[in-house]
Length: 607
Image (tube, rainbow, N blue to C red):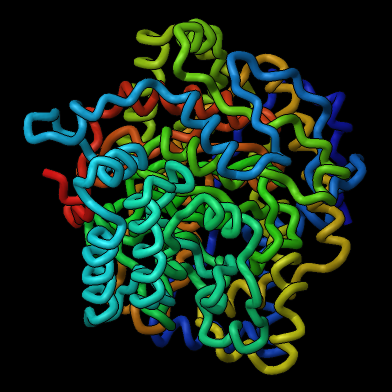
């Protein structure tokens, strides 16, 4: 007796006096034989339930989900009040062909000066942009076919490394050559399809890209799920002329944040080969960061685009839930997952986003999305709009990081944003941050388990990697009542954020609470379970998934060990244009603080 707690109705909570509870997770760090033993124990019928029960009690899950009265009605998928129109934007018609949307995106960018990019005496830069490739192709400085040969040789080199560290799980050199030859011919005939024609793009292995199967990082999923055509988002890119180079490596089934994959091999961070890329979109991030691709498409259900983007020093855009049609992805029926682009620059993110955007018919009916918008950065008025942007910062949450290098660099970026562009920074309070993790893990875990149960019942569970089996054992321990409680918490948290967005336009945080973690040598063969590291990696990203809010990670510099740090901007529902505008400004002020990774390939070779 005496365990029950009763939450105040959310409207009665005094937000200004809410206390921040530092987030910590209690669980053992396991690799090798210890991990094997732990999996055997938690999958045992009686012992496993006892161990999981103890772990959930230690981490306050039981108290929160089973011993607390949560007065709000459940929110089973994100829903939002009507949003005010964004200012200074170009509106894209989602019924238009992607090629036309991409053309409008180009008109939103600042003018392109090739003399600053493509000659021997041009200033130093980090990455070739999509516009650089298009300029090179049009002026016969390179062709898609010559670039393809550079990429093919590097990918094959990676595939032959020992121990394996593939960037791509599925790759067909002849298929890439075929696409590149067709693009080269179009340029020779003066009939290129769009600025994306001849641009090399990788697709995460949980998104369908015909003729490749989708394994989702497993050894067997392709045997139970046939791929007959491209996912909708991939089809949109293909219609713009992109060259799809294959299926990028990932953390198995997306159930991890490091990118560790003992089945296919673990992708390494281009900034330091002894560090993780972050996950689960590990391959997409490494491909972009190393210069092999201008863009990649990943999925983000728990920071899986933003975490690796931050750890690899690139841009990761997570769109509003329902903004991009998910049909044709392995996880298309969930309530937290989106498909989104990873790119080297913000302008490339805008171009690729313009091609990908467009909701499914069901989501257009149920979610009633605001129009697709992009910030018009080409007009002088853009700077005036930027100066009126209000940034919200919850300092206690912002500073809850493993290394003060992260919070210090992020604070420096915000101060420059205020000094140079006039953005105002306001202190805000976001109550009950500590309940976010439980609400998210129950939501994504229950949805993942529902999709996988038929295969697990057929005995496929034992073919999964050990850390994935740990996750599934935890997910099986959740009850239907736990799921409903999590959705009640989702509605409470949604209320707090909608209240905050009445005062500010964007909420700012570090992207992750830790920079790229070291790869343990014992983790490569059998995987790794390190919940403490996972907690730091996911600390700031979960809200974007649980509430479906748009968010973007922008690289702002490096820690003392030379590892990238990302700043996250979280926007209002459907507010992609606003976060892209501010992201462009952040990129500008932090440009000289960025460094190319130690592993970088100049596939365009114009210099």
